[in-house]
Length: 359
Image (cartoon, rainbow, N blue to C red):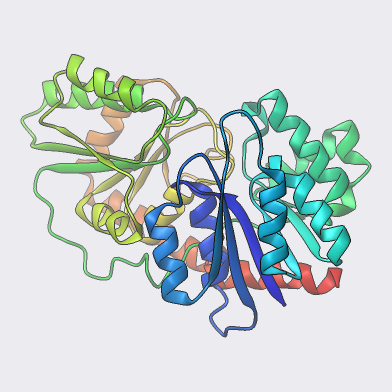
């Protein structure tokens, strides 16, 4: 079979998930291709990965005032996939039209937390439930939320639980570096769904309370970058915080290997690839206890803190930094969990089983 994945063109969770699926096909059972869609050009790391692996790929630019549905349909027609994984739910219409004409199988992946969806996101999700062959849910809680919805309840047989996966061979950190001072990072899109403000306030508290040499790496780009830069200046953290911009996979691995801790401040998640990657790298995680995090991971695997509470976050960072035994415990528990439940190979097998059942 030929599997084409339709996803956002810029750096973000879509790309991490999509490539982990294709990389999970370690025995080269199928052909893989990608269609990137968005206002941003194709993230350089994505195009390089496609070229290295000889994956066919196309880019459809979204214009400011309209969706380029015709161009997307033409890209699908050019690639001629037999199976499609749709990561961007708002593109369901041209994907379904192609699927009907060419008898292709379309599965839609629900990436966004239900409580954080806008009206247009909810409408796209409803269309995916109605039109896609299968809807992939990343967590049990998300699946239960869909089952409770009146419209979704009528299509419950379409819902299948498949989590995100991590390339555990790449994200392994076999030779951790010796760290000086206190280094930690956060990797995400810079947008209003992430809580960088709390992270920066906690960092200011740590710098004022201790003599530690503190370094915070904020990886990513997006709409709130200017606000984050302003907060850094106002909190006098210019020497402490490094805004790296978007990084390719090797750059992310390098940043994680520099850090004793990974911090993820968020208002809600579905299943964060950055958290999974940090856990696979044996970097202890401190994260907001919000939907998509607190209900997914136990305290054996990550350190949970209240949302929007910089004092508690700063105390937790310092406490875990001092407690080497606890860090080691979280590191090993996290790596074991990833290998057991979230490896790219296991996730690819689950997708393939779905496709075979739909043929």
